[in-house]
Length: 351
Image (spheres, rainbow, N blue to C red):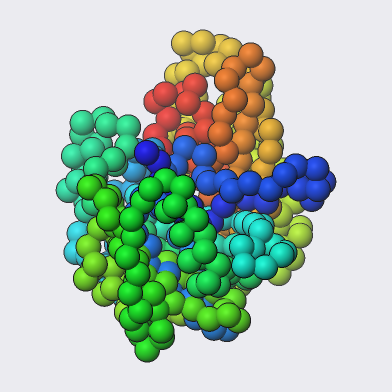
């Protein structure tokens, strides 16, 4: 069963669509949420940390071990990680969702990083398995804005528990001097069986850390130092418009190799893959075009993430993919891994 504890929902729909459509909870398409898992949520009042997102189901792409103290998740520095772990996914979210304890809705943005042991990741890739299912993983998520309170989170979790017959225990603890709630989901197997949450009614940020080992989860939580939210570009509206145009250019299949002018591909690996794909089938990907790009979440002046959905007439609907954008000397561009993840027509394109 997919994880149902998806804190960050998918990017906001346009205002017009939100007015027409009934509200519903959504998770990253193609990702397992953290409901059957555990989450550490560290909520700091005023400068807090952020919530966990849905666990990606795709094969991991990262291969570099992350040194402790170098990981920064949406302005929160992580001082300790288990030895030998690598980043397997990096996602952002932009969420508008209804509150559960009172009428109204809240809006928050955030970033989630997923980690796994490098040896397990190497084994998954060597076996060409499609995902990290069964692998012990950890996740750190930071949200900022109108983050859900502990009471709202607890209400949602109890509602989920009652609907799916899931058992969980809760314990009041302290994390880095903050009152916190530790949750344990009683499952036969779970990468995220333990979670902890701390925060307050006026918190404008929250941090959630999930994993299979209680002591490791708590140690990661204790190592988190909350800093200010990342500074975005000087003109975010102009940057957002440029990012949307970049997405349109990068995912316009009829343009063929010209799409790669909007992609960061210094080694030419994506270009080689597209060239090979077009050699096999000159019409490969030709009908693919951008269907939607969400508002970007800025992780700094030169980094952003957004949800992208493409469509192709006569083909099954494709889900939304979290895509990273980077500001280069030639303007905003899509990362190679993001381009390759969307265009599965070019099967040699390295994610």
